[in-house]
Length: 296
Image 1 (tube, one colour):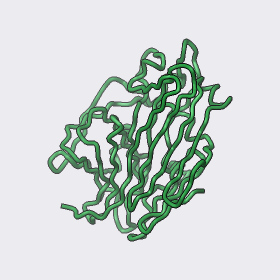
Image 2 (cartoon, one colour):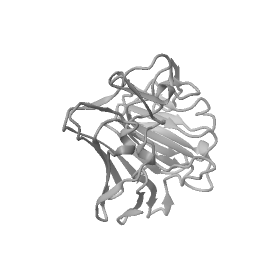
Image 3 (spheres, helix red, strand yellow):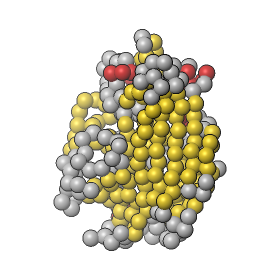
Image 4 (cartoon, helix red, strand yellow):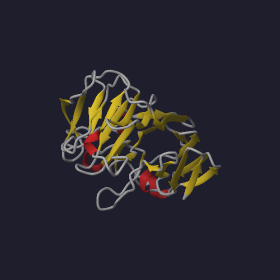
């Protein structure tokens, strides 16, 4: 386990998946990350690569061949190497190998870089194409935050606040986690910026937003001023999910998404797919900030 620490936060990261396992806010003595109860949902904050969401028939189609690919990709199940570490900085690396090439026939290095600065954690995904061909991929984050923050509160005391007014429509997912082509409206409160959390909000799976005005969202309570804020300017899609009735919510910046129902498509035609030319490098960052803002 690797620990980053300052006078505001203590952050822990494990080698499996280069996954955050703890975001502990010292001034309020609060653990903000879901602690991966395996009887509910056994993850903390998985990193998603080389796909986001599910593939049709759990197969990726690359250069005329089909490759097995689990939902959200293999990175979260892989062991990363810690290649740099200080009290405020850590770099984890996953390089292609015979096991990854059986599911994803590209040579690559995928780094997850953590930077701690006061009460903010910046997470950077760095993908290097070490192949002689164009590489196609998706990447995203899946951090789960404890709700409520305090034991004397309820889930329904919390809401997600968007930094701009929104008219939300979620893209509907099937029971197999694929887009159906349908959308449905999602009601907001308080000048169309606040999404109340309820225990039935995710009965039909994740909320998936593809055209937000906002590039920042905050998890807040009606009862106090503590907040968890995500800035995700590099990520055009946002997923919000919880296992129904569970005491957490995932706020998920994505560069990529699940397949749609219907016929399979080659990887280069997947929605929101990213690509890097031979020898190229890709970077995208988001941040998690713990604050005690005044709630207006």
